[in-house]
View 1: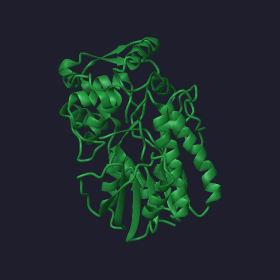
View 2: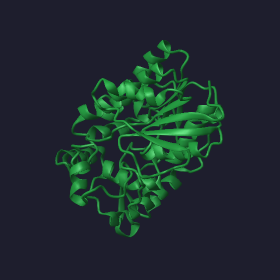
View 3: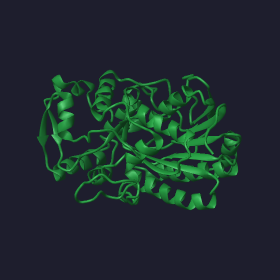
Length: 362
């Protein structure tokens, strides 16, 4: 059962990179009457048609699922986007939110008898790609790269949904598997999550960046967050089920990034790159773990034919345009009026180091 005119949609994780784009897209859809955004911290941002509810899905108490059921009752669809990337040094915390919290959301959807569940999976759920690097469709195995917490958790949630769907056949479940998602307004947040506080902003300007490392085998797909949001919106109004790959062309490697920045691409061995990243992570200088780097080297390229054919979806931004916009945001420290996307965290640079650079806190 799809979302009809005048219906209500609940977005769990509505204040992050993808959530803010989804809320905007739903607000522009005449078939959507109201949106409930669920977040750990209520934002100052006031988008059209949207009311806010505070909930932390990682909260380990018995009342959380009851709270979620109350928010979900009467909804025509729940879109579940909430996810913690950090702290990479404390994977039990990310597991508590991403896996246990996700299970609570799914069970609350079933208890509230919501007819549609749209879940944010990821390219990171996929098993390592084929040796010939041909793009894979949605039937490719989703066992992730087990050493990386992000991939392990995304793959586990795929198994949770594999068990959930037969138990609740009346719920139409859609799994979105997007590539790496960027937009200008997420730049400050993603700098904290993936680059840490020690990267000087001036280095992002090509005048200060004479070379970009080009690592053999590191070739990724990206997508504008607003384009991903349109796929979520389209899935609500179409009688579709199952998984959809979402990505824009072209795939991005070090040379493509060097061309965008007007810099020179310099090839460096995988081993040297991983050793440098391992050292930086162990010294708490960068947030991402070396295992996430290992996973990135193994990710498949995704075929997006199903999304084009069954959702009528087409990205408006190329991968190059998306990265150019994101890099502009990095140069200017662009953010939004939500806690996850705030241009600066309370307390200034030292707080920023403690919160994200060391990989010890969400």
